[in-house]
Image 1 (cartoon, rainbow, N blue to C red):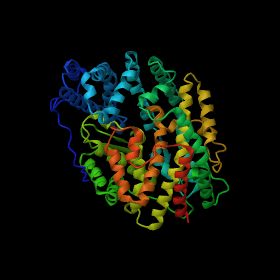
Image 2 (tube, rainbow, N blue to C red):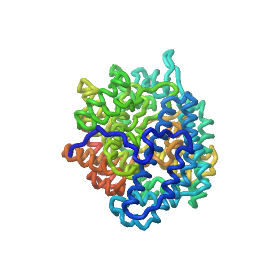
Image 3 (cartoon, helix red, strand yellow):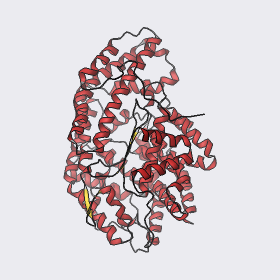
Image 4 (cartoon, one colour):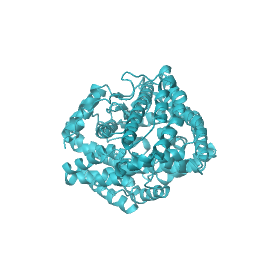
Amino acid sequence: MTRTADIKKLTHNYLPQDFVLTNWETIEPFFKELNERPIESKVTLEKWLKDLSELEAFISEDACWRQIKMTCDTTDKSLEEAFNYFCMEIQPQMQPYADALNKKLVQSPYTAELDAKEYYTYLRSVNKSIELFRTENIPIQAELSVLQQQYGTIAGKMTVQMEGKEYTLQQAAKFLEHEDRAVREEVYRKIQDRRLQDQESLHELFSTLIEKRNQVAVNAGFANYRDYKFVELGRFDYTKEDCFQFHAAVKLHVMPLLDKIYTRKREKLALDKLKPWDTEAEPAGTLPLRPFTDGNDLYEKSVACFEALNPFFADCLRKMKALKHFDLESRKGKAPGGYNCPLAESGAPFIFMNAAGQMGDVTTMVHEGGHAVHSFLSHPLALSGFKEYPMEIAEVASMAMELFTMEHWQSFFDNEADLKRAKEHQLERTITIFPWIAIIDKFQHWVYENPNHTVEQRTNTWQNIVKEFSSKSIDFSGLKQYRAIGWQRQLHLFEVPFYYIEYGIAQLGAIGMWMQYQKNPTAALENYMNALALGGTRTLPELYKTAGLEFNFSPDYVKTLMDFTNEELEKLYN
């Protein structure tokens, strides 16, 4: 099947071609018209759905650009104000209309005539939104949208001095690869001390978020925010008990591999004790991997890598570059983290990240590139709602791309030894990420089951959970004050609550995709693209099945995948 990245921005058939969203008054007439329009047949229903989809796509893209611009420059107050204006003045006015339109759809007698298979997940999602909607939650949710972004503003200002220069925390992290252990410890402590300076602000922000999120859940008739969020996230295909089973599987089948990886690292560095500032280091005389020089070099090498894997993937990146949909390099005043932001009208998404010249940045770039490919593949679907795919498949798109591309990392490394080290780094990370996912997920379950907890209780619980999933091979003695606030570096806790277990589920899926790729690369990539092209039009188990995967995170299945990954890692070690 021929696929093209030469996608076109959706044209307006309902909205004026040059329409600009300035305030609520400019957009309300379209919501009113859709709400009042009679639906007299299946044909008029389908036209109504297309017009609604066009309106949703336009508003979604407008909101996305406001957020993108704000995260690219957290120092520009006008960008923050534009984002906040949307959250506080436009979005709250839309929500009652969205609820009315959802009800209009499900109550129409012609909805039963729509293709049951094509519309099943879409209508399921609409019914879920009706179930959750409460008028009294509108102002709270608007406030939450603004509050959540304060994390980026606080973290974006964090810098440290090293060797007489100022660095963002992302840039400073490259000193953790320095061959001089004293330098590594110095930067580790400086980064942690800088985080300590803002710990009270972040505690206060998180407590406020928890309180307001809990109120939203209670207003909607839920026992706690966890139960509410599971419904809001559309977790129709697994439960909290499945998450707990995942935590147990990580303890049983991943922790022994973690200990092995870090014991090997300690022996390789010839250390009596491995400290947290040693985990990224190499023996003296081995230079850190420097796979690219700047953002443009990272882009060019990523295109070459994607071209070798599948030319369509490279074309997706080229299209984004032509549209200026990249902001790759770390700088002061830029929000932390990395993301791929789908743009519902444009089709070609935006990639944001904080590259500082390290190996981890390559992983981030190909990860977000996988998300980008997903956006391109699902763009031709007829309705915006069809493109709202579950995060558990979205992260398969990105994490599988990390593993697929490994065979083509020659574009980043011109000698075999560096390439081998890079692959080791990737596979070690594929394993070591699981305990952190379990920690963050387990912490969130506790936080929202116990919303009235004190800061002291939160800290104690965090430390106990961390202890459960910590490798015995790393010595953390004397670092308790740093570890006590370790959760504050995870932006998901602030900005996208409960979005983290998806990485664990999807990492299992990604390993499964990579196992397929080892046997038959062409068939594996075809399965991958076929699944992603379905967007959100199938259930999660169906999407996994299309990709040739099991939707399964039982301990036995986790063991199978971990054994495979460990075998591949051992081949690189030997």
